[in-house]
Length: 248
Image (cartoon, rainbow, N blue to C red; front, top):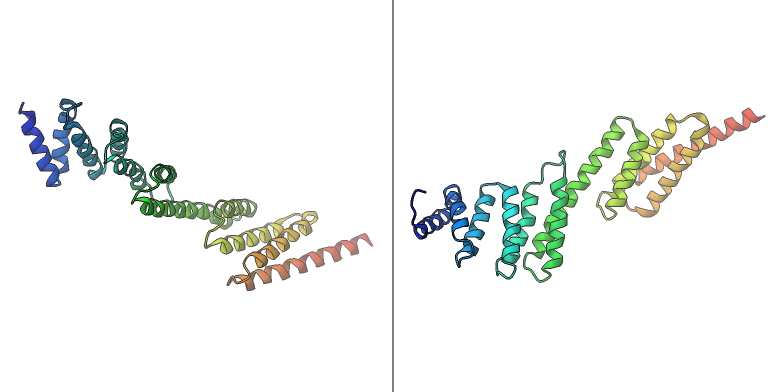
């Protein structure tokens, strides 16, 4: 660090980097970054300096450096890799499902931008896999929120949240489970309704059950859905009979 021989410092920094001593390499590259700016060595220093931050798990700084590399060296043979790594830093910052998923959403956006920008890249498959993982995490978070509404007996809110979930992930493997929970939510909401609203709301349950059978004819949940259909139809019949008696 005290030496004024910058070529020597660069050799030592490269040696530290090759030995995966990224902490010491980063300290030297940080100084050399300014010294060699604009020189023939600058691209390699920039590249390694960015990776030092990445390997030291300073992902926010690494993201900024990967971005800067692409902006400074757009025609470099490493530009595609740096573009991908920028997106990947957001994936590394994606937290567990119960926490804020801003970085998960950013990962999807940047990975999709990478796919669009580099259509022939060997990293396309990996980028697509990461997008799928992120979407699955967002789907699970939304499902847990809807399930919480149901568990807290906020049945109307649960039904709305689950409908939104199905619209957001129409190809989900769990679509039948979400639809079934909508039926359960609507049924409980109908049960808790005031008398004059019950028929209308049980009819909604019937509609949901019929939609389920049409969309998921082979679902393992069909038997349970049929039970909700039958009991809802019986409730409608009983309520209409009561109304008729009252009218007479």
